[in-house]
Length: 163
Length: 422
Image (cartoon, rainbow over all chains, first blue to last red):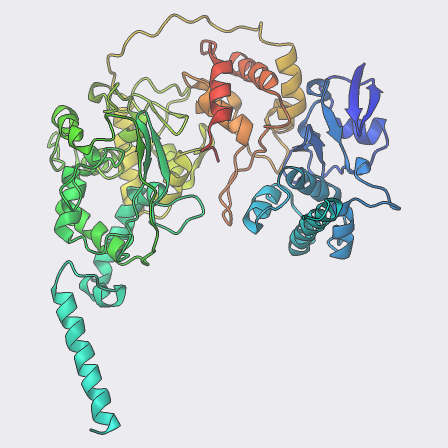
């Protein structure tokens, strides 16, 4: 038995310690946001966040996750209350088949939490490990840029006006 | 005067001015007036030679324009910034004559006669023939000029004093063009010329003394580069499966060999450049390295180390199963999309220290943007420092018959703190 902190909830998991996190998410917990793409850490469809970093859940055994904070796309927003990135992906219509999108959003989330104003080069470099085989990469990049702008705007509004 | 004749007068004046300014050899001249000075063949030869010398790797900063310099090079005495060697008037070397360039390469002296720091490996470039240096000059002078000011070096006292380098040169600098060894054939000599001269392989692959000079008695005996271990290319090479000339040729040109692994870290740009070099030269380098790999050098006895054993299982084995085995595990070697080297054969796991393995597990392996090549995901973020150390100890013990690495944790800390990581 191992306790995992997923989206701020403790989940008690009964699985072999070398089981990849992705299998636990999908098969044990029914959280199907993260996708199985290649199972080899080559495509990024399984990307989740661990302690704020984007990580391939298909090559991350649960044995290394004791005491660490796991965040999946289910922890970002809901259909009635979208996260900023989810809204931006819809606004830019960045999904075609959609299989890669949860991974794309989680990788982008890790970037924007650390760097609210990334340059285009920084976005491209950061998103490099994640593949989209439909070819909506340009829209995905636009969505990340739009999300960064929206996050900054929301933050500026929340702050009191300068005197 | 009508418009036509005044235009003609202007044109004549402009032509005269152009000729006059070009006649002053050190006068700023734009690329258009300089280019015809070099014939295409010489420039093409210079391009090949510049690729063998891997000039672009140091003289280009990440994301910067080619040859415009500014790349920080960490030395044991501080940081040196590579210079802008494009033919830019204000910030480049357009004013350098062929003789100035030759003197820099052969004597380690800049245009004003000041000593150059040996981070610019003139201890190797002094071996390059005049003809070859002149071809590189032609290549460099026909690049696009880039206006780029390079930051000043940040060196500790007294190494920030260039005159001191005269003493360094007296002690360690052996000036002179390569002299062919008649006891060996043409290919061996070509290889030796390229490896010891322009290729400056020893700059990374030879250990350095406390004053930063190569230990010539341990030529190619293993050194370091940018926080990576540069593998020994003499008889002390840690590879469990001796290289063949054909494997070395492929590795140098394609950055990959099925029995040894991938050209990673600072070796990646080297194999990238060598992919553009004519085959015979790369074959000569490979042939010469087959000879150096047979040379034994006396070296200081290393402290006794314990042999690793099956004790390193448990947690490391579990991490391996969950994180690595889907590609590197025996049972899944048939997965069509993965093409891996048996881990026990990789140079990084057999190396005397864990730095290369640390870099690869942390950062993964990937081709440069727009290129094809091997891919491995990095595990920084997924694994904590303790977990990485456990995994590395397991890999070393389980896959090689080498002594355990005694200093994984400190190397890990050091590597993770490096700012110049890719």
